[in-house]
Length: 345
Image 1 (cartoon, one colour):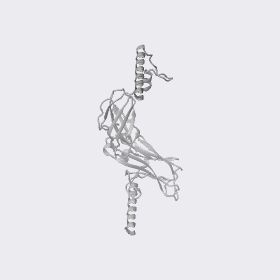
Image 2 (cartoon, rainbow, N blue to C red; image 1 turned 30 degrees about the vertical axis):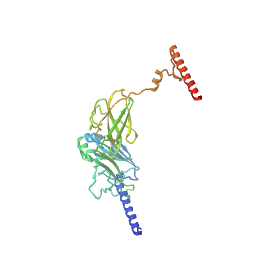
Image 3 (cartoon, rainbow, N blue to C red; image 1 turned 180 degrees about the horizontal axis):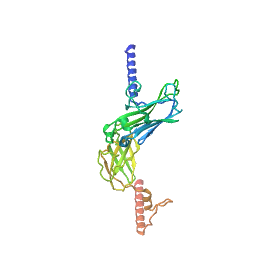
Image 4 (cartoon, helix red, strand yellow; image 1 turned 90 degrees about the vertical axis):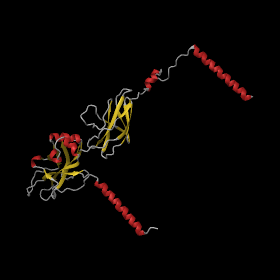
């Protein structure tokens, strides 16, 4: 029998293990941008983004190339609840400064720009104040260190970049608050799916596959071609025959795409995964299949004499067929009669 102390020890170990798991799970969550009571909303204004949601903009490889090629600005507009331009006795207004810094994805560390060297102050020339907003801008190359389009994929970055402003509601005794905008830059391609099986009809291709092992995959796409497709290519490459079609998900590892193909055509179907920043994986080895003909029941029904009001056409019987039918009926009756006599005997 276990002692009470032993049971307590086991319970304590289990509790600590659970706490450790909880902390590990929490550490995987990215840190959200800081907010301030003075800021009504934060709006990213960036020339090329995959998507934007609130104070966060997502940038993948394609958008990175466009931003790096033009050395474009990454800009955040902080809409304020009051005019921040009035100055207090200390010479500062409601607004103090704007800075930027970066963190690896999943990092939850708090960055104190007053006590470490992680932050870089944005020059006044790149900050604009109006009655209703503060706008802070920083060049994409300066923010990320990426120079040129090739650097986007070569760098293989998965980082979060923050633009932070310091504001205070009271210019006399107010405490400085922080508000941030965030850029999630992911230039790491996801792993492709595998084991693609395709079944084609003129209007639909049904697909089955093994899911990509990458955790940030949001959907799968398919490239359909009547000419061979090379595995390992990327759907976002500058190629006319690599037009990705979004796969409609029917279940885990099952989906379909709409097509317009001729029956009997041989088609090649390759798949790729796409992550939350729009990056495509390499294409899989294509599945090869023939487009199966589909019989239209209504056309078949009409060809056989069917009518819209129902019923089927009946061909008139010829004299010979009538005689043949009567002969078969007589033979059947004779068999039945003999069977009855045998039973009675």
